[in-house]
Image (tube, rainbow, N blue to C red):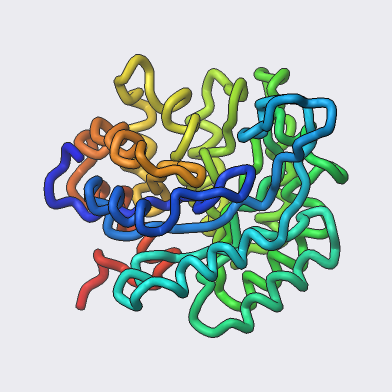
Length: 315
């Protein structure tokens, strides 16, 4: 990283890919150490890409062909088993989240309730895949959304137990760039659950989702909802916050203004050799911030929300 001595937490990291395959924890830890990443927020992949009989080539990513994806509960067990095999010192470097439930099933909260009976393991819920780009249309079942009735008991459970929840909820559709088609769904969930700690994955963006004054909407959302936070992983940083490798000034000002609400993340999916490169993208942003904001965004916010400690707090 280009900011020596700065503690880093990767706030968005999938242990497995869309086939539930992984390089494994040994490889992940090696790349974390090489990249200077102290800790990571870790979760599985709630969907599996189906290999249809009519496709001669095995798919590895959800966009590889037109076959659907389906919900896969065992992904949480894969995360749990991988962590339990680690020495305690290494295990403490991870905040694992529960994601292997169907967010359109009103019984989905039961999966979370059962796993939370494992003492001392799970730190929250996510990444919950709701409004997405092509993945929404490629997923079996009805469309998942932030204000779906099945999500309300999940939010209530998280509120009751003080668990953060990471949501992938696009703010609009890939074909509507003049207004925010889906933003009201997130706003409804936040209004109904004001004590809920929500991390908005990728700033509410994915492929081909954009708006000319996106930063102004994010500013309004953060000002209106104290429990809302943002991870800037994937296209949230690459396509919106940056222009030709330079961080847009309006985003630097926004992150500085809400420095206790932003996090960085790699969004790697089961394969980790690009970890250092993914996180080096943030150097320009971090260097443009004040020292306190820099520490918050690089790791302090994720430490507070997912690990339960606050490096900025007074002793």
